[in-house]
Length: 291
Ligand code: ZN
Image (tube, rainbow, N blue to C red; front, top):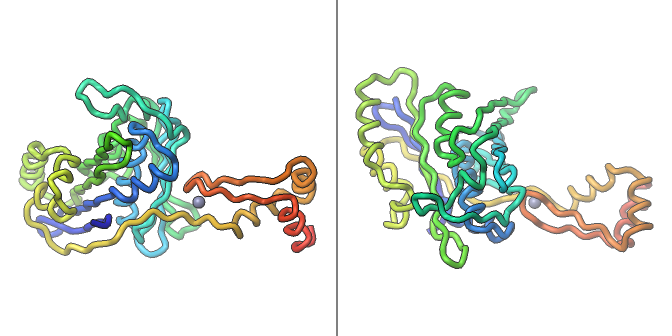
């Protein structure tokens, strides 16, 4: 089943819902970056949160999520947009730790229990929106819950999960976000909290074959205004963009590269694509542009 996201409302529009399956997206990230299991879980949870945050945007708006913890994984950077496209990486993809006390992948150990989460939204305005919160757990779902409450003043329940196979491939990944709109009454919140308290971990539900709609049904019961959106890994780098970056280095730096190295290799952080320029390619690039 292809990854997709469902956006819906419940309780007469007083609750906003998002649910997503991200197994293929996370598997592509694992494959591109050679993510080890703990790293894959951390990166996958962040990607799942980011695609749902992307689904809260519209048109050409974009969101960048940076998780900067003090753990061995280094920082996680994730870009998502309103079209369900996401790309991202972690500084140290080959991070893997022994399981935590509950026998799960130790995401908080990899991310770190201290640090910050930064959210930058390009809403097409002059200045981007920026929000940040301190990391409170490192397990990420709790941290994004805290982010929505503190930075966006939107009480939310966030659940994120990634299950990794023995051979390091991704078995399943997904999550949901439930957001309470300002005018909601206490009774609805009480009902919600009651339901959420008994919900199984998202990876368990996905393992049972639940779709994003099923996840919402499981968590909230009836919902309305459901819209779906396919999700995909997508990077926006290209050889042309890399050429422009190289040219921006200027003549001196480029000639030095031509003289010193047999070739230049530029690697895109986001997708790990390698762009190679041998001496000839660099020379002709400089000639073409009159540098
Ligand atoms: Zn790329």
